[in-house]
Image 1 (tube, rainbow, N blue to C red):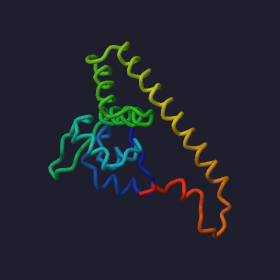
Image 2 (cartoon, rainbow, N blue to C red):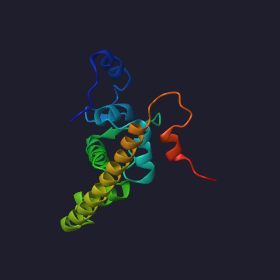
Image 3 (spheres, rainbow, N blue to C red):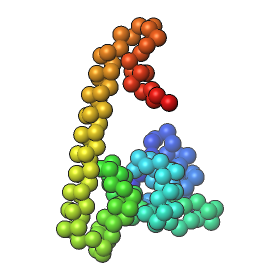
Image 4 (cartoon, helix red, strand yellow):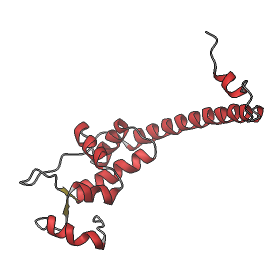
Length: 154
């Protein structure tokens, strides 16, 4: 999988990065190909979840297909709600060391339990807000039941 460059920008891209091989690309192309913003990519490098790529003579980062695959893995893990520390552990298994499959299953099961707890909390919040909204007439009355529910008697 290579980054997709639109036709309108492909000529400019070709001129600016003509020194790159077909399997190399700059951070903007990596960002476009994975849907991960540039700041996040730099952050992932800073904390060691993403290896720092080599740089060209101008100091620009030059990524390869392995960076693309790893960043896609990170993005998918984040989409599933895994923390960056959990993703780091999962990457260890993918590389053949670190966690066993049984440990990954345990981690995933605990994550599912956390998600269910959050869903339960969100449903409770939804019920309370729905009840408060139903009690509010929406008029210009100074006593709003929603605001009253939020007030603290100090």
